[in-house]
Length: 452
Image (spheres, rainbow, N blue to C red):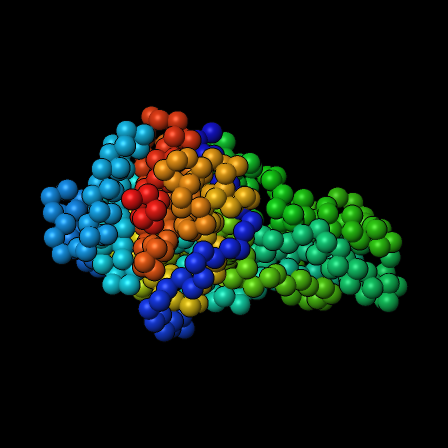
C-alpha cells in the first residue's frame, strides 16, 4: 500500500471573515461551460498551456535564487528571505517546490522550483472540484431512481456518492405504497449501475487501494460502503428496506439494465453539488472525487472514464488561463502516483478559485489550521509546534498525503490584511511524515507572517 487515507475534517470556519478585499471578477460559468463543450477534440497540452505568470515574474525568480528582493516592501522582503532559508529544511528533502502569490496583484512573491512536476497527492482534488462546479453548477443534484416492470424493482444509480440507507428507506416506503395500492406484495430487486464504464484501476493506482483507499468506481453506493461491489451492496440494503415495509423480495439481488417501459416509482435527489464539494474537500474523500470526475464526464457527454473526466479537467483549467505546463493527471482524487501538478499551477488554480463566486464552496471546504476535527487539526499533529502554532485559525489549505508525497496548498491573510495564496509540495523526503508536515506547516506560518 503506497497511499495513506486523507484526514477527516468537519469544520466550516472561515478565518478572518471575508477572504478577499479586492473586487471579485464576474463569474461566467455558462460561458466556460460552452467553451469546454466547443472543444470537440482533445487539445495538445502545449496549445492549452499559456505563459506562466510565475515563470515570467522577475521578482519571484530572483527571490527563489536568493539573489535580490528589490522592489518589495520590507515585510515582503523578509517573507522572501525567510522562505528561501526555511525551504532548505532538511526534513523537506531536495524534491521540494513552492510558490507564494500576492492575491491582490496576481503576482508571485516567491517561487522555488514552482514549475517542477511533482506528485500532488490530494491537492489534485482542487482541480476535480473546480471542473465539476464550473461545468455542472453549484446547485446541480444527482438523482437515484427506482423503476418497476415485470414484477421487478430496479434501483438505478445516478452518481450520488452521498446516498444513505435512510434515503433508501424513504425510497422503499414510496415504492411499497405504490406496490400495495396495485396489489403487489412480492418483487425481485435488481440494480442498474450502467451509467459508468466498468470499474478499473487508474494509471498509477496500486491494486491494494481497493476497497479501503477507494472503492471500485460505480454509480450506485450507499453509506459510502468500502466494498468491492457497492452496487450489489446498495441493492441488498434496498431489499432489506422493502422487507421491513412488508414486501417479499424474491431471490438474490442482481444486475440488470432498466427498460424504457419500466414505470418510475421513487427517486431521491442529493444535496447540491456545492455541499458535496465541501464534504469532499473537508474529508478528502477519494470516492466522492472519483465519482465527481465521472459524473462531470457523463453530464458533458464524454465517456464516464478516468480519461473522459481528465480531458474536461484540462479544458476547464485552460479556460481559466491556468498553465498546464508539466501537468499530468490520471484520476480525480490524487491517489495516482503518476499524477504530476506543479506548485505554480495549484497556486494559479487557487487564485482563480478566490475570484470566482461560483467556486466559493471550494474555499468553504478548505480545512482550517488547528481546528479539532479538521485535517489540519492537532489530532493529526498539524500546526502544533513552536514555529507554526501561531497560524492556528489563520490558514485554510488542502492537505495531500501519499507515501513519498506531502502537499499543502491554500490561502492566508496577513496581519496587514493582505491575502496570500501558497502551494508547497515535497516528494521523496526520507524524514518521518510527521516531521515533514511540521516543516511544511512552518512554511505556511511564514507566509501568514506570524512566524517572522
